[in-house]
Length: 83
Image 1 (cartoon, helix red, strand yellow):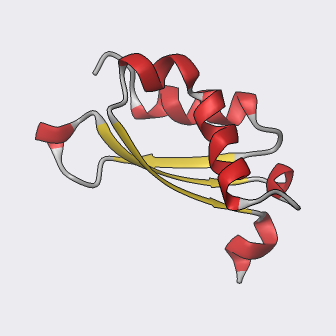
Image 2: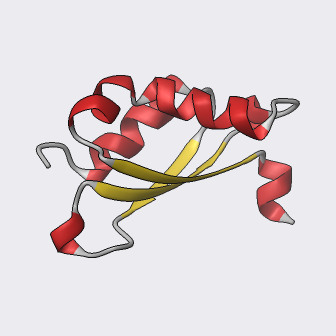
């Protein structure tokens, strides 16, 4: 993988208003293109889960086709995340 986890977090945070993204490699170093992301943003308020996930996939557009093979995604509004 030519991009770093920090690059992916920065891309999500740049594309989604007030987002906080945390990206990890849950499966280990030999599976580096499989990632997990937790994204918290007030922009998700009122959106369906599918719309929230689509917003993240759109933010990572070029990475999803070249660098990231699989992304386990969890999205929350700040209120949901703090519960």
